[in-house]
Amino acid sequence: MITAKGYQEGLAALRAVRDEIKPLERQLAKVQAELGKLHATRDQKVQELGQFEKAKADRLATSAGLSVIDVVALAPSLGPQEPASAPAEPPVTVFPPPMIIQGRTRPHRGSRNLLVPRPPPRLRHSSPHRPTR
Image (cartoon, rainbow, N blue to C red):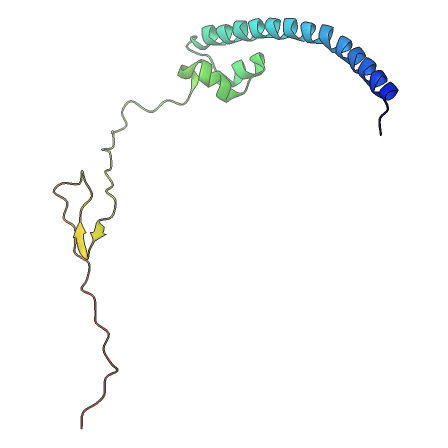
């Protein structure tokens, strides 16, 4: 159990820690601001160099201390390019399966002119077959 004297000593120790933290937080804010400026300068330089026709993303990444993905995000022209002569594939439209409402099959909204098969008729369960004599 803490006594009143122990509590006062604890508060004094806490103030001492607080006093050590404050100047470090101010230094950290300054360093973070400077780091932000340097990151912005680096990103701008990567974008500028990425415009060079023979620029390579991996070389820029190594020089900038970034990953290739980060370099391509800054200079998209350095990323993989689709060939201009590649035929464009038509988009594939996928319709959801039909809804079954009260035993009837109905297409979803927006799927006009869609032929939807009806579900097979339900078989009635009857008593086991007994052969006749």
